[in-house]
Length: 276
Image 1 (tube, rainbow, N blue to C red):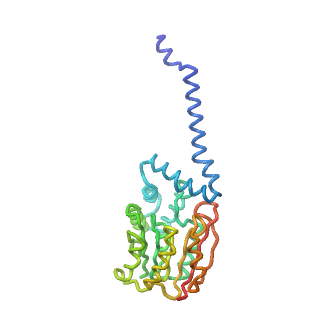
Image 2: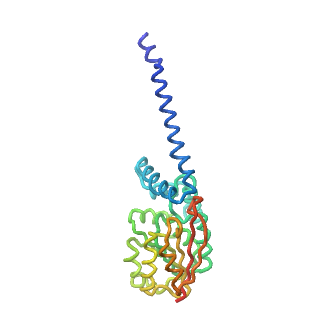
Image 3: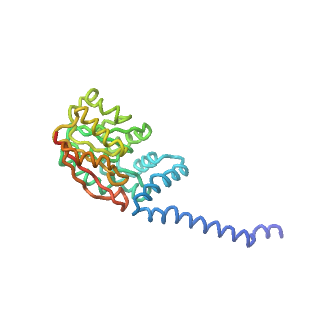
C-alpha cells in the first residue's frame, strides 16, 4: 500500500521537470510557428530563408513528405473536383493558413488573370509548373481550342501537378512537359506544331529568364505582340532579365508592383510586349 502511494504521488522534482518541459515546448512552438513567421513577413531575405528553406525542410522531416505531396492531399480533401476556381481558392487557403509555397499567389494572380483575358491567347507557354497552381489559374480562362504548354524540371513535382490539374478538370487544355526548358523549348514546333506563342509566363529559375527568352527568340516562337509576364522580378529578383527587356528595343516593358506571394514583402511582375 505504501509502495503504491509513493508511485501515485510524483516527487516535486518530477513535477517541476514536467512543468519546465511543457513550458519549453510551448515557447518553442510559439517561436517557430508564430513569432518567426510573423517577423519574416516583411523582410525579403528572412522570409525566403525561413519559408523556402528552414521551415520547408523542417516540415518535410517531421511529416516524412514533400510540400507538393501535402498540397495535393489538401486539394483532394478540400477542393471540389472539376472546379478550377475551387482548386485555386483551396491552394490559396493552404498557402495562407497552412504552409507557404512559391506560387504566384492570390494578389499577383489577379494580374495574371487580367493579362490572360486581355491577350486571349491561343498558345501559352509557362516555364515553371511547380504544383500546377498557375497552370490551373491560366487554363480556366483559356478560350475553347487554346492550349497551355507548361514546363516542369522536377519529375516528382510534375506528377503532383498533373494530379492537381486533373482534379481541377482542365487537363484537356494543358500539356505538361517534364524536363529542362532549354531542351523542351526547341521541341515546341517540331513535336507540338506550335508556330508562335501568344503569351509566355516565366516563373522558374530566375537566372534562366534571360537565356530562355533568348532561346524563344532564336527558335522564332515569338510573334509581334507576344506578351511575356515574369514573376518574382524583385524577390528573389531577376535583375539581368529586367535589364534585358527594358533595354532591348524589341520589347515594350512595364513593371507592376505587388508583394511576394502570401507575404508583405515587396515584389512585382514585369510585363513585356515583343515588338518584333
